[in-house]
Amino acid sequence: MEAAFFENLYEALIEQGLHAIESNNVAKAKKLFEESISIQPTSEAKTYLAWIFSQEEEYDQAIELCKQAIKIDPTFGNPYNDIGTYLVAKGQFDNSIAWFEKAKLAARYTKRDTPYLNLGRLYIRLSNVDQAKREYESLLTFDPDNLEAQFILGKFVGNKNGIFSR
Image (cartoon, rainbow, N blue to C red; front, side, top):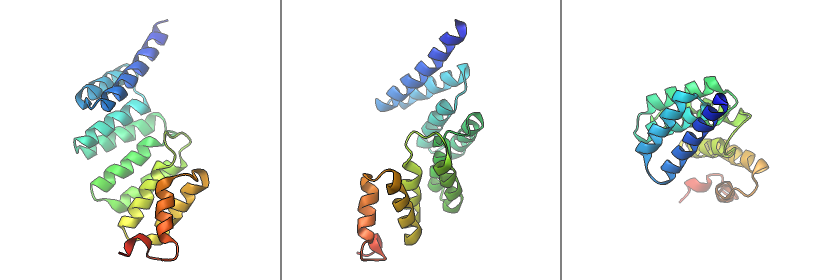
């Protein structure tokens, strides 16, 4: 009985934390995720808490929390992607690519398209049009209605430089 209570409690705290984020109450969300982790450290709670640290531009702390999340559940793709995102924010573009690639391979993912979009955007930023195109094309194989990928690839049609020509 007690174990079931705590399982429901830490899950409820995560859910409340997500609602707090939606309500723009980041400080409350942070406390709720920390409380959830104190009851039961989960990959999800650590990843959400990492996101809060990233909003405070505490990228090293956010990356460390994501690495802890991966140790708890290596099949959860979100922390891999988030590490890549935080590395991009730190200007470490080359290091971020491997993390996005790991996210693409994860068995469990909240939004499977996210690492493909992030890689596509990064390759565009790095002026690697061919690799960006491959990311968006790969994304459309399992999410053919993705508007960003459709838009970007439409820009590539008939123009190798695509979105870079103005």
